[in-house]
Image (cartoon, rainbow, N blue to C red; front, side, top):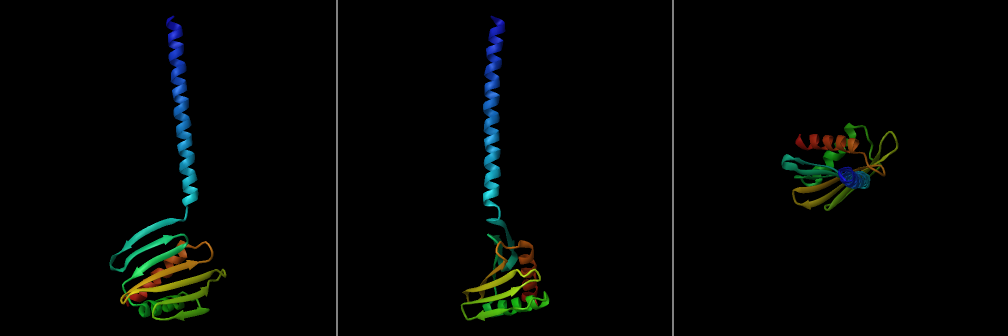
Length: 149
């Protein structure tokens, strides 16, 4: 009698452990699945003092600068020249601008500017089809350096 009570209790505990283990495995599978699905959607969002914010979203580095579109455009051209990247296409008006160039690996680099207000410009940098956060940040850093001079 005592032995059968112990056996029933042991079976009950094992069923509970198995159920808990199944939940843990399911949770881990869901976390891994969501990491794979959301990888690259929003990699980073960092504040940059007075310039506003920058974010790396779906392969694009996006930033807001507290300068006019003309100033950001010239700083972008100077940054590309410093990085030895020759623009293949440039277009600009009072509302927006686009600069296209190619790197040594023949990846297309697109810099888009959009005038958000008189002294505010939205900036977007895209490298290739899938984007490169490292290269985008390097170009952005050069643009920022030119804006501060």
